Structure formats: C-alpha cells, structure tokens
Length: 325
Image (tube, rainbow, N blue to C red; front, side):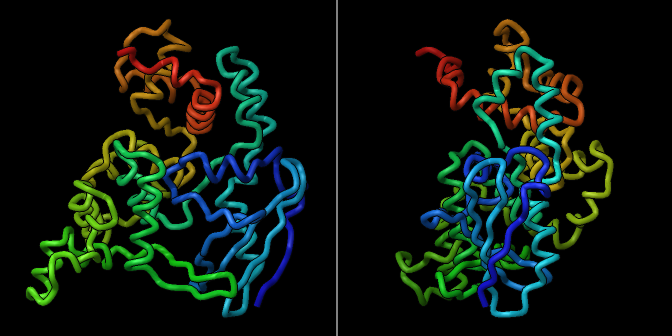
C-alpha cells in the first residue's frame, strides 16, 4: 500500500534543506538513497517496516512524502518520526539570529541555509556508524553500514526495491570478525574466498573487534534507551566506556543519536577551524577546543559544529587549513 501525504511548511520551524541535511555526513546513519527526485529509506515505525520517499520543491515549502508498507501505516507515528529525524521542530530562524550575533559565525548561514540535524532512527546503528566513522571517509563508513544491513538486517521488499534495516546487537555479536573466523565457524567447509559474511568484508577494518565488544556491552551492560534520560556528562562518561568510543565519537552519538545540543564533536578539522576563527590560528589542544565550543555556544554547540564544518568544506576554508607539505 502506497500512501502520499505532506508535512506543511507551517509544521517546519524555519527553512529546511533536505539534500544537504541528508548528505552532510552526520554519523547517525548512512545518507538516504537518492532515487531521481526522491530520497528513500527504510524506517521501522511501531515495529513495522515502512519505505519512506521524501522530496521538496524549495526550502520553505512543504515536505512531500510517499510511504509504502505491507502492513497498515500509522501515519501519525510516522509523521512524528520524520519530524524527529530531521529536527523539523527546531527553530532554525532563531538559531540564525544567534549566528548573526557572532561575526565569526554569521558567514556560515549563506553556505548552510536549511541544514538541520539528521538524527538517528536507530540508536544502535548510530553507535556503530559513529565507531565506524572514526579515521574514515564518509563514503567508506556509509558503505560499511549498508553492507552490515544487507548481511544481517531484516529485509523489506517493496514495489520500488528491496531495503534492509540495521541488525540488532546480537547479530553483530554473532557475526565473524574476519574471513578466518568465518571459515573456522563453518568447520572449514568453505574456501577462504567464499567467506564474505564477516565484519571485515564490510570494510570496517580494525573496528570490527570494537563493534563486537560494543554490541556485547549493549546487550549485557548498557541500556542505550536510558542514556537519553541521563544528564549530558553522565551519558558522555558511560559512552566512553565502550570500545572504540573516544570523546569525539561519544559527542557524535549524543548529538545525532539523542539530540543533546550541548555536545560539540571535536576532531582535528574542527580544531583547525575553531583555532583559525577564534585563536588566531594557534595550536590549541582538541580538549580545550571542545571545552571552548561547549561553553561559548551552549545549547547550540552541536548545531554550530555542524555549520562550521559544512561551511569550511563548501567555502574552501578546509582546504586552506590543511597543513602545507
């Protein structure tokens, strides 16, 4: 059953640029599929697999949707989920007033008009995506997460194709880390070249062992749902106990997974950008940059980080800040 509907512009607080939001590299999930004029993805809503197709005519107009499911579609729940994923109730106009009050931030608006948080539909997928993104390119970690979906996730067959949800933690824990473990699990009945259902085959590299141990801890020790009800500092500390989760990855999870706006994910690129804009290009440690961002920008810290990085990429600032060879 395919159902069309719209989210009106009155339901969206400020501009919304669907394309740059989906393609901004946020580690909540891979970018949605671009199918002609629509962005498509499989969502799990009320435990039902729903294929969602989104498009828009302009940044201030309505958001047009087509949804397909083999079960009855609960439109109210689905609309709430779409609004949450794309943070449509965040007042972007008010945020732009905040940016305009800072001469270092004001230029970001022209390059980032309508850019919003791209929040996780699945907290465990956000954890795995964020771990996989460390020291990795956006294209590579997107591909890895999609391969993990295809190998171990639930399958949804629709008129427009086959889509997969992200696997539950037990599936990742049971998955072989590499081809040698897979061959051993098959009692040697497979040739090494046939062993392609392991984490290494998804391109995660050394992160595979971190992912498996993190999956175990999520099953046995850490309730991801409860983290969203903790104070920021407590949630941050809990996340950094997971293998493969340092300060930057923890902040990504808190921002994109839980919408904690005070998180300020800081890597070498954000360090260079903030050092250039606020510290005359001095070599400031990453931790001090993170502390500065959280204190300086408060509840807007996460959005500021998002805008600074996108602005630096699109304006050419990022290239200018690369170390000279």
